[in-house]
Image 1: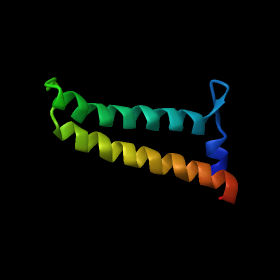
Image 2: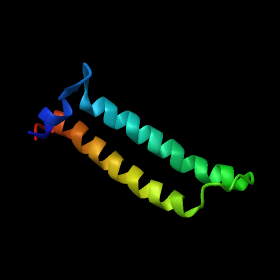
Image 3: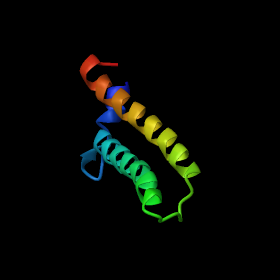
Image 4: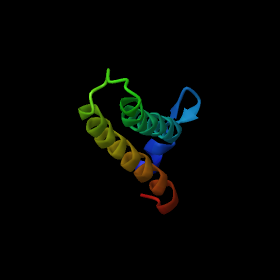
Length: 74
């Protein structure tokens, strides 16, 4: 059932691919906040780092669940 969601085609690509790209973008954005704050660019408050980290973790867990569902058949 979940593997069918992972293989659902969106714009001729499987949904799991978009989940991986979104997770990567969220992780890079999370890493950029303290990097820029250390260099003096403080437009984004540090509190957003924690929020983006939580969203990144959820996205990574969902992406992992979709990937595991393909191999284990759930």
